Every structure is written in C-alpha cells, then in structure tokens.
Amino acid sequence: MKIITHYMLAGLLMAGGIQKHAVGKATRPARQPFPEKGFWVTETSPDKKSTIVKYYAHSNHMVSEVAEPEVLDVRKLSVRKYLNEQLRKELEKDTTHGANIKLYEIR
Image (cartoon, rainbow, N blue to C red; front, side, top):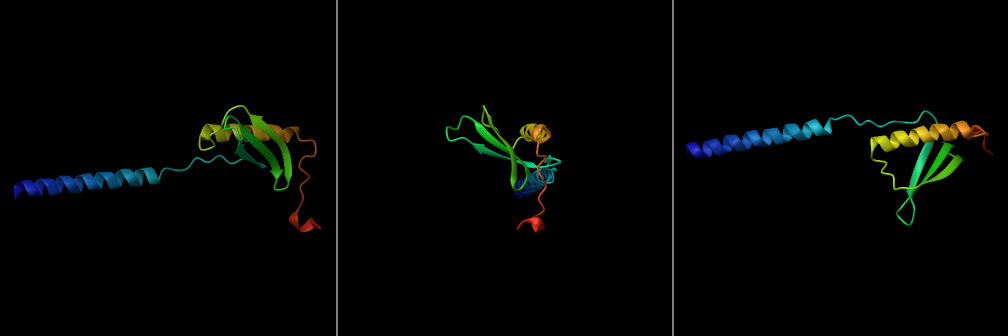
C-alpha cells in the first residue's frame, strides 16, 4: 500500500512539473519586429536554392524585387531583422517615394 502511495505521489509531481514547463513555454513573448513603413514578401525559388524577396511601399506599389543567394528562413528573428533593414534601404532608394494612394481616391 505504501508503494502505491509513493508512485501516485511521484506521478502527480511529474504531471505538475510537465504542466508548469508547458505553461512557461506558452507565455514566452513573441519578438516580432515590424517594419516602420512598407512590408516585404519572400518566395522560395523553384530550384529551392535561393529566395526572391519583394519589397513594397504599400499594398499596390512594389519598390523592388531582389533574389537572395540562399534560402531564407523567415521564422528566425535575425532574418526578419535583416529583411526589415533591407526594406528600409530599398525605401530610401525609391525615387517615387511610394506615391501614397488613398483607397478612397482610386477611381
């Protein structure tokens, strides 16, 4: 009877530890860096050896399209920061400055 009690107690402690560990991972804040202006879209090339990155000033003005020599994993924070920095540089080079079209002015 004493052995069963010890096993039940050990099982409860183990279950509590697993639950605490799972809750700790779920509440970790997402560190998503958002660009100040514009956005970027990535697309893996058909040969699976490079990535095509398209930089936009707003929803209907593409600033540039660049082929990166390797496959970029946008799940990584460092890659997202790199793309945001490249977006900032591309927006600075844009001569039209993304003529901000307001949706209600489109005919």
